[in-house]
Image 1 (cartoon, rainbow, N blue to C red):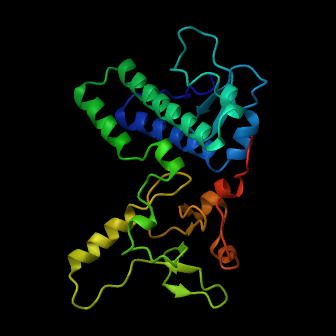
Image 2: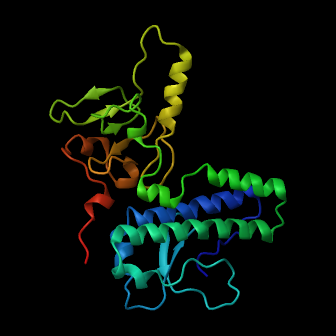
Image 3: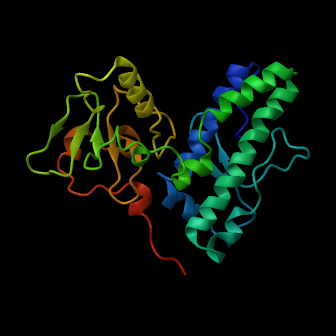
Length: 254
């Protein structure tokens, strides 16, 4: 099976890295590459599965023939329901099964290499610190609108540069933590930094970092790494209304 890593993870940290890579691939399939993923899930084809790979990529493929398989298998036949339900509901259902599969693979490695109680607990805590694929897909993560004190509603771009307002596009600005008043304590500044760190990329699901360029979708209001959606700071300054790949690809399906 192509999803089997060349160097099978044997420690908690290695299993978590494998989990995170597969998760990133699945999130990419259901958000950034959603149109490509949709087209590959042709109901006329045989039973298909969505695999997340350790190198942060994904593939739609037939299940393996071996019984039992080398790794737990994802949900079988996801393509058959594609045209029988609303696209959003279908993607959400695939996301839920993807989350279940990710956990199955991670704890399969744990069982295979004899993780003890503390190892399993450590692995679960590391996994649980990341939002699920379903949460990322449906925006059920702590985004900018959850922290009005940190993310101004008129700010759609943020990076490590100084706060500024574009002369030509007043709806866009580079976003940094809100300045503190002179009588505010250093503890409040730490709280704001912590809140900003809770912002999660709508594509890869990782946390905000001050040295990275981010942009917010004007439709779904999710934040994205510029690199994840292929938007540079210079390009963003000339965008009057930014739509993320998922919102851009939305269309009515019968």
